[in-house]
Length: 363
Image (cartoon, rainbow, N blue to C red):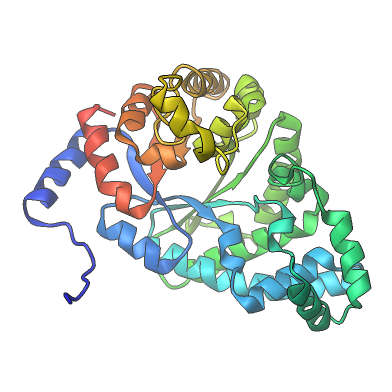
């Protein structure tokens, strides 16, 4: 049995990719949350992080318990204690991530998925969680029932959580800012922090969150020097956000188009359930390709193009990014290059493909 080795780019391939970097305009970032994944992406030539999914940092048992304590707490004292623990956990994560990227931009997406994804489900897990949190099983079940949703992917998630659970927003921003401060004290390069709020549909949602984020950033004192540079943006992943891009653009520094959810909500197709019929659609010529793999240029693509046009008309300094599965697909990348995007963000192992394709597309 042969030993496994980490892929390495060098030799002729390294030379070709170097030529590619000299001729493309759009940057290539990566979607990662861990130092290990970030180092892999850097070895493939990534130029920053375009999507750090903050909720992925909660999956260890100890962190999951603290998160559940915060979600399920009924009083401010219990909630504050849980928040303090989570801030400590995430501060170290962000500090390490910022230091690893050494002066490259790191885009942190605020908490996005429905809360139910982090709550206990089976009988045994519910019993164990109740015991760990010091709750009666019956009280925990009642709380879980209140949090249940019929269609959670279109429910209480993304920006809606930041508005209705401001303590979650506070916890995340405290951790990001503390991590940025810690990294800035140990490295010579500036820390480039980008924070984006997901799943918005109105400018008023963005304004609500930005006001609170700006206040926390100002109170941190981090912007008094050039050691930390901060920008605020939003994920555009709902059709209404594309339509109202001009209003939203006036409130942000950048757009990042989340092609996965934008495809889901434009087609009205659940990405998780699509495999049951998409293959038949393609065989019968109904769809030319899977829109979750290659961007639907005539629908989703038109919405993106329209949002970019309206956004830049309202805010000429607006930075445009693309993240999601489409950002690693060559056909989609050629389309995005034609829209003049500033960067794409894909999984680490797709970074070389993106570097080469964007150069071929002159984007």
